[in-house]
Length: 59
Ligand SMILES: [Zn+2]
Image (cartoon, rainbow, N blue to C red):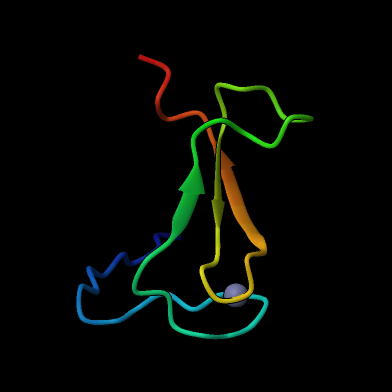
């Protein structure tokens, strides 16, 4: 089984918590204290719930 991946530049992702469209995502580069400082914390600009934690800036 293969999954079809379609590029969707004209659709905005929706926050799973408040279900508002996300035309931007906020992040804090310093973590939240209890999370290690090299982790980025991404959160919804509307309800400020955490959408994900990334380590993309390791270089
Ligand atoms: Zn939200």
